[in-house]
Image (cartoon, rainbow, N blue to C red; front, side, top):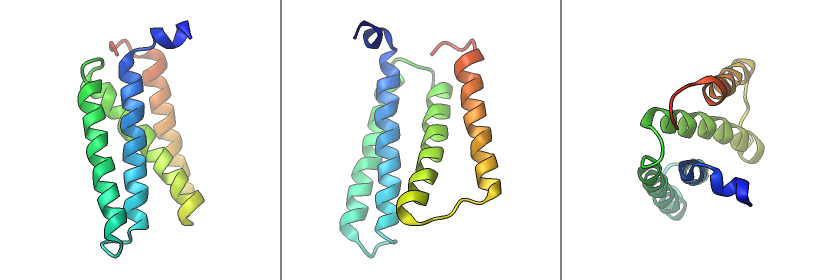
Length: 116
């Protein structure tokens, strides 16, 4: 529990932003355009929630790091969920691209001297 207390609070907030963002994209896809207004309304609320989480996370981390984490982790998670639950396919180029995203995130997390 002590280890969790030492983690930058910005990471918890960006995790909330990523979760809201991924779920909003998923709900928007399930809404099939504007055929399901309820799903689109839920997606809009989740998307707004994602921005609220980001606004608070900016108190604890730099905008560049926040955006890299938000977009990178969100992109990979959305693609994997779309494959699993929406039946969308990921081709070889997609897998290679996501591999580069993960590699880039790893380099930033492990080797960057940017203060989080």
